[in-house]
Structure formats: structure tokens, C-alpha cells
Length: 462
Image 1 (cartoon, rainbow, N blue to C red):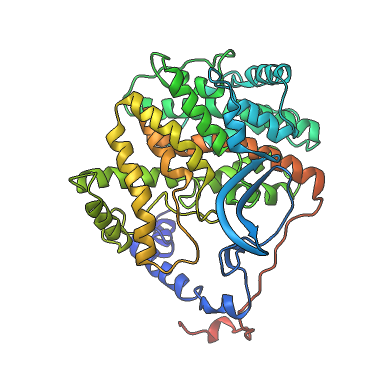
Image 2: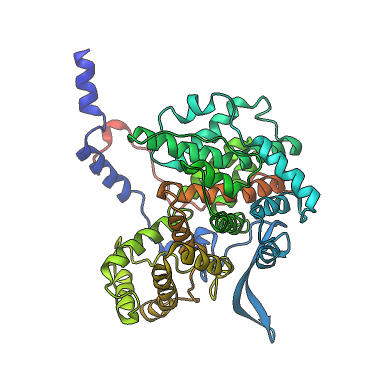
């Protein structure tokens, strides 16, 4: 036993110096010249040199439009987002003022291809409501066991575990996949909120669990289940509902949706495909951006004495770009998008709702700072950086601010994105199963040189 212990201590990479040393070796033998991407015309990140995504598939679910044809030339325009051919701005403008079921209406549209009638929407809402409750003992046996500080990991774990509760888990017929998708769409808010309460409880806070209300919308249930007193205002529910609508879908090319297509194409089950999408969305380059925006503004509100002073705000933004402020990344979070240049339609339509909520919450000074940064950041970025396209505020610029005004915990910001986007993921999964038929397998070029094998006794340390 003692000999075994000495062997482990001698040979296993369990100490920090060992890990650092081997990591350095790994980096030295893995990194190659980035110029090779250009040499071999590799579309790095599946993008052209101008940042445009490489065409890898077809979809009817949504469209992102950022250019228009003028006198035979393609020129940038205000961004537009379409769900099944309908402009999202028109969809939101058509919602009744007293309704908070916009997300359910959009989910129906994404899944079934048409806007629902009033009767169809009522039936659909009832169907989702019947699926909101989790399986018996799931909260006790899954969520309360080993609560995670990262709600996205907790959500992914729960999704994979739901596979064990489904007697037809591996059936990928469209009928069964649709049933699974509807259940996950309905269960995501419950799982996310319960996972947060479980984690909060182990940190010495009181535990309260409210059952979802079948009469309430997704947005209303989130607020009701999250708050001890279950109370919320009509405007709070309305703004959260709009946030869910705007995050529900964004074309097939975003990382998590493309992940859904890739994993679905292998023929795997719904739970595995959605868990993979969740793991993609968790990344700070994708779904975690609004958390970064909030952190940036928190520091900004302390560092800038006069939030209305454009020179002072611009100077701070310049410090961010020079890696002298916030997280030293050189990024002004919430500004810019891989596709949109002149404007992100989601940020454009969201802005008015954000202002109304800020007025209700008495946070108009903070809203004014956001608007000031939105105006000045493109100017500062344009002056400091050589960019190939315009820069504007994206939806993450506002979403974190909205969630903070709603009193939502930071841990739930990215799960809220997932609660919305699973509608789009589900629609794309079904579309992939119906239309594609081939496993997605892009090509990678090997740039390693062929070498002769060296026997062990003749190897020397390099």
C-alpha cells in the first residue's frame, strides 16, 4: 500500500508545478502559426475574412437580415430579425397590451410554422402548463443533491437526468421529439428557478419552493416562483416576456443552435442534443455576455463621477479598449455583433420597454448612462480600432440591465437565455431530423509532418 502511494505521488500530475510544466509542453507542441489559416484558405470559425458566416445549411425557422440591395450594390442596413417570415418587431407590436403570453405565441410559431389563432394559442398554453411540473421526487433526488453554483451546469445535469424518467427517451420519431421538446420548454423555468433556490439554500438562506401556476405565462411563472411573496407588477412580467421573445431564436448559425444541428445529425436523443446546446450557450462568448455587461457598468458607475459627462464616459471607454479598465480584455461588452452592423433589431425594440421599466423602478439615471454609452461607444471604437463594419449595441447590452431591475439573481441571467432559446433549438432539431439525413462532418486539414517511429530506448527528451 505504501509502495502504491509513493508511485502515485511520484508519477501522477497532482501538484500545481507538474500541471504547469506539462501544460507548457502541451502548448509548445500544439500551437501553430495562425497565418496557415490564410495560406490554406481555411474559414476560421466558419467565417470569411470579412466575418460573414460560411453557408452550411438551410432553414425556414428564422432569418437575420443586415444588408439590402441599392443600385445593384449590397449595403448595410438596420438589422431585421424574422421568425418564420414574420418581422419580430411586427410580432411584438401585435401583442395585446394586457397579455404576457408573447413567448408562448412565438414558441408556437417557431415549432409549427404559423401564427396561432386564439383558440390554438389557448390550447397550446394549456399543453405547456400541463408539462410545467417536474417528475415526482425530481427536486429532492436530482436538484437538491449536489447543488451547483453554476446554474447552467445544474440545468444541463437536470436535462440529462430527465432521460432516465422518459420511457421513450431514445425514440427520435418526430411525434416523440416534439413531445420531449414541449416538456423541456415547459420545464426549463421550473428547473432553473429551483436550482437557484437549492444553491441559495446551502448558502444559509431560507428555502421556499412555489409550484408553477397553470394559469400564468412563462414570464409570470418565473417571477412568481422566484420571489418569496410571489408578487410582481404587470410591467415586470411584460418586459420579461418581451425579453424571452427576443431571445427565442436567432438563425441557425449561432453557436448553440449550430451545436443542436450538429449533435442532432448524429441521431442522438433529445436530452443529449439539448444538453450540448446548453453547454455551448454557457460560454462567455455566447450566452454569458450580459453578465459581463452588468459587471462593466457596475465598475463604470463607480469610476465615472458624472454619468452625463460625455468626455468622462468616452475616456473610460477608451481605457477599456486599451485594457486599462474592467477585466482588461479590451472589449466593451454589449457593443457589436457578428452579423449586425448598423443596429441589432432586438436591442432596438427592447430599448423602449427598458425605458418604461427604468421609469417604474426609479432608475432613469442608470438608463441615461446606458444610452450615453450606446451613443459614445461606436465613436470611440471607430476611432481606436480598425473595423470592417459598423458597431452598435446588441441585445445583451440591455438584457442584463433589465434582469437587474427585475431583481433577478446574476446566476440566472444565462439560464434565462436558455429558457427562451430552447424554443429555437427545438424547432431546429426537428427541422434537422426531417430534412437533413446526413451527419454533419466538416473537414480539417492536417498540417503535421510525417515522422519515423522512435523506439523507447532511443528517445531523448525534447
